[in-house]
Image (cartoon, rainbow, N blue to C red):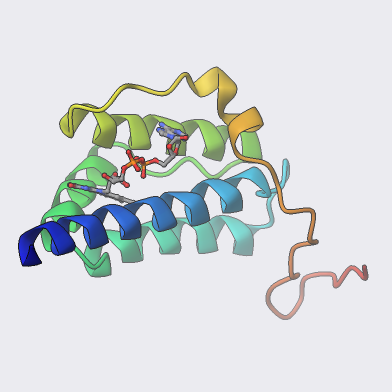
Length: 125
Ligand code: FAD
């Protein structure tokens, strides 16, 4: 039961993380600022080290090393993320997701993005 509990928690964290990443990507701007591009790369990079499942983190690190994040635009980032998720799906024996449908599966929340960092224009609601 403890083992099943651990497996369930691992799946739950996986779903939660994919939800965060795909939702964030759904809202990633068509023309991201340099800071936003850096932030997306950094987020992915951090997951390759501190994702709370060591094996997952190691495999993901290898995947990202061979396929560095593409953060030049929202559509490009969404496609890259969908492809990485599919690599993980394949490894786990799960069905592959049709990446043409990613924008209908994962919608933006409709909240505006915070404008990060000094020196970048702050846009009101
Ligand atoms: P998830 O894979 O969690 O997907 C959630 C939902 O996303 C799906 O229901 C579907 O609607 C949608 N979806 C599926 N594929 C895509 C796609 N390609 N693009 C967009 N949307 C999609 N688990 C392990 O056991 N071993 C690992 O090595 C491992 N590595 C992981 C690495 C990372 C970076 C992450 C975030 C998770 C990892 N996981 C790993 C967890 C695993 O990927 C799943 O999250 C978990 O098994 C639960 O799967 P699920 O079937 O509920 O759907």
